[in-house]
Length: 110
View (cartoon, rainbow, N blue to C red):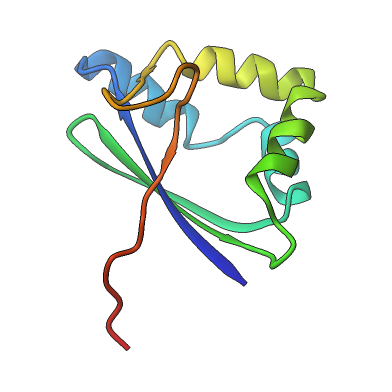
């Protein structure tokens, strides 16, 4: 199993942040299915102020490239991502059209 941690910022507006959290109380069924079909087994999103952290647990055969291809072919995922962009904002160091950014693990206590 693979584990990933990603970050993204929300627009710093309490009303928008509240709406974003509401959408995540019960995501669309098609989005849940697309996440699971891509090989992601578990997903958690945490927030402090307008900073989000996402933790993914995925099968060994999971890849972000494969998921991106699947997402492009799924109109419901495109609708969801377009809607979420109303609430999200790219980090200052993000590449063009990059949303969630993969974090580098620098420490592990075992």
